[in-house]
Image (cartoon, helix red, strand yellow):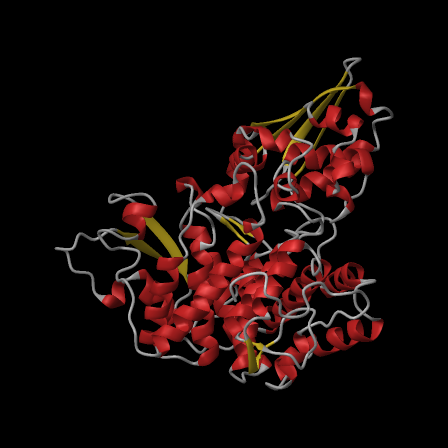
Length: 502
């Protein structure tokens, strides 16, 4: 790996194309390295993971509406939409829109946290849709996804977006474009232009994850994937993009991020070096914001020590800067303490999440967020006794460059009314690669079976699982089988309608 310095260049100071970050990323995308077997295995795991959470969310309103929009854009030889029959295909950018929303809706797929945060599995819907449309093989898809993960993970390591109140999808549009460039075998200059265009149109504010969080939280990554596809299409037709997109005097760093004097270091593999960044990422065992994963596991253990939750006086969660200010009381969002808040808001409230996990000793992607659960009187009382504090120890571990030290946990101090104190900490979620029960292929398969039970048939379940595990050998026709058809329940929005403009 090599660190690349990225800064603003005034217009009077020339910057060669080859020295621009976007061009270096395009060169990375066009580097035809072999894919290591453990990387291939993890890509298969994440395709299974995405399908699990997408099908579980298939009839939630945002997902059904995204699907209804996609169904307005049928295309012979296009891409599948999750839940729909395999023989119905749609324009790839709209299939990516629908499938990306389905994957993101439950906040339940893979994650990577460093200088910024991300869900790199958001790359998969866009690349799969284009692979199906353009007749690519399973091996082609694997190469594209290895690139997409490599780009997004390393941008997240080097460039912080949330510090400047920008949404993390700004690292996603460009990774989708790069991954598509690899998968389609495009020239470096075409990938370069596509990536610049994708970055230019996917910068947005963090308000999508602040205050009363709406369904746009699920749509936002799907939008970035759709923009990535459209940017590549445009570049393939010979068009250019704003340049230099990162370093320009009026561009991203200068006016979206740290300003004209800011400097960033982005690590990238050398040419010829394997693309292994997906192995730095981790998935979720629980449907909630990633910083809550270890705390949910910890709450299960601590709750066993409490006989009567009415006897709790206070609960203080000592945690990282990010957890305190994004999902904790440091966010100063009254909605995070509101029993009438949206599901999207509740899954970004560690106070709510910890209270429910403490009481129930379990977590469910639907039941734990149900309005009647959030409004339960004893839960609200307990929830409102919880606060967070930033602890420099956990902030340091959050940003630690050593993967064996990096952690997203907390210390929790529960004080009872009689003065008894229950004090415990947990650094890593059980499902983390270095956690107590790391997710491996059997856990991914179990997650798929569990989340799709009662939604798809047993035959469809086995068909998908058998096919996806043979991904490196799949032909272009067989890639259509990576869709999952819903037939055990009624699929909402399964026909084109006229509720909107399309």
